[in-house]
Image 1: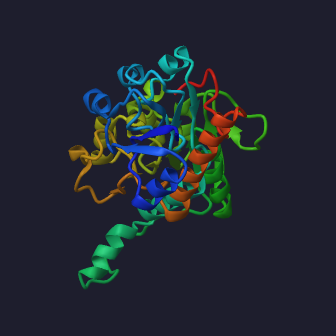
Image 2: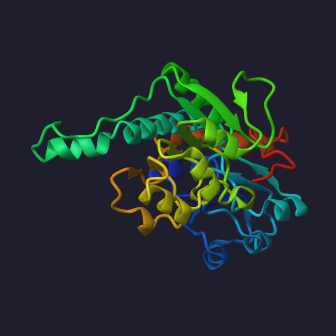
Length: 316
């Protein structure tokens, strides 16, 4: 009998079929509430595949006595009850690294679009007008980028920025000894230094509203913020006030608080652009995450251990 896998993260049919070649599957996409997860739980489930925004509540964990392994499809696991799972002796793994190139590409696309005013220029041309009277957009090259969170994704964003002759510095909980980028001990210092602040830190309670009123004021009226991490890292109301009053130049957001509902405070502003939490999604990136999930499960059941375990003591 094959181990039973409960899939809480949305997957296309082809990827569900790929998993079903090796394991029995229960599929309950979007089950993010406690009630929905309890309804989807089964006492024979041995593996759960979820993602950061959906997570896995401790009540659902306790409803599955045979559960051995919890996997996050991507790098994030902020809504998985990690400590509770470890107390139960459950192994945790993630899809870290699988879609980081895709996310980094998207971050640069958002940055270029908002700084170079691509969306508004497109509307002008689509409306039959031309460039006369339009404000000139600033350069991206030759500027300064501050990266909040220099993990795998943040590092790849920094590498891409260098191709644009952008000077890069970063802030994180600890300075890295393996990079040549400047380190700022505080986020306000980094924001004061840079033209573009790119948010690439994990979500969770420890990073909630890190980008607040003071940080946005430090970024200043010529600064832009790009978020491809989690919406909770930016204080939405503070961001809306900063944009509307001209205290920052603009924002480009793939993630935002309250998603999938669009943040009403930021709608209709010409210098704010959105994408629907899709930075890490491409055919190649999603296939990579499914393949890594299968490697994680195979490693666990073989006794070797998952391919990409979530480190003990990791904090989100």
